Image 1 (tube, each protein chain N blue to C red):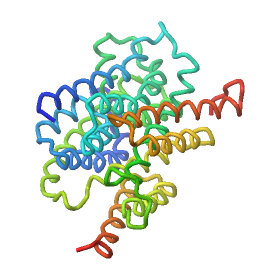
Image 2 (cartoon, chains in turn cyan, brown; image 1 turned 45 degrees about the vertical axis):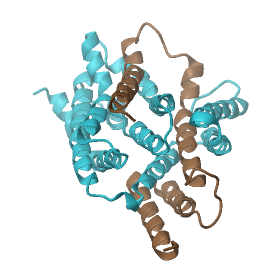
Image 3 (tube, rainbow over the protein chains, first blue to last red; image 1 turned 120 degrees about the vertical axis):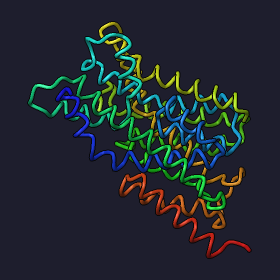
Image 4 (spheres, rainbow over the protein chains, first blue to last red; image 1 turned 90 degrees about the horizontal axis):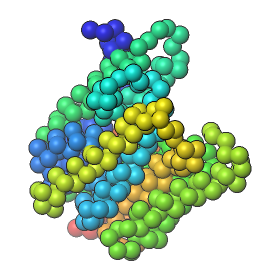
Length: 231
Length: 110
């Protein structure tokens, strides 16, 4: 096996401590909103993005329309655009389908492990193999753990209120994304507008709130630094 | 939801998410991400996640409830402190759920 592929997988082992339970929670959550084991596996493979999957489950629980679920999931996953733009220089000289496979496996963790290694290491490394090793290990661990979670989930009664795990997990992810004043402004605006606009039809307040939150963050940052410096 | 609409939902989300992951790896060297988009993207997680969290705490039964009888609001605020201090997803879920269950066990109407 390629040594950089092995190295990428090896360096991703510690992060599985976070990946495995989160994937299991997504499996438990899928079953708790009434998905079958097969549907849970299908979603895990087709979407492979935990936070957006949990967002969809929360919206399914409140009976939101289809289009709002799709838009919300896309918005939650828009961060992948940033990752893919950042990793793009390292994943070149590949055929389109090879790029497609590597892109499909992109996760927060594969991005974090790979990029930090690429930036820090002084050794010669084939970035594509390293990233592939990291992303594939995380993908496999995620899929297996999601199935285990779905099997365990059928044992958890609905009366436990497990759906409350959704907002709790978003809360932790939200706090992790607060870096400075503009991001805090984006969160406060998004959250407050979502509460005020809760009564809008089709749960459309969610999408409106997100866009106004982004606009507020952008504005606060522009006021602070008119040249648009980055963090 | 019907089985068909569930699968269409997964396919729509999956295709869109794939394109988000693929676009700039594929387009590298052809099109750069415009600066305004890069700046705006930075605020997406904070804004989108807050928009999911806040109403789930203030509207647990579909209507606004800011009273002390809203256990999800109380447990959520406790979870916020854990999330803020640790940024750990599992610990936030664990402590938030434990507080919700404790409140329900202690104060819930029979």
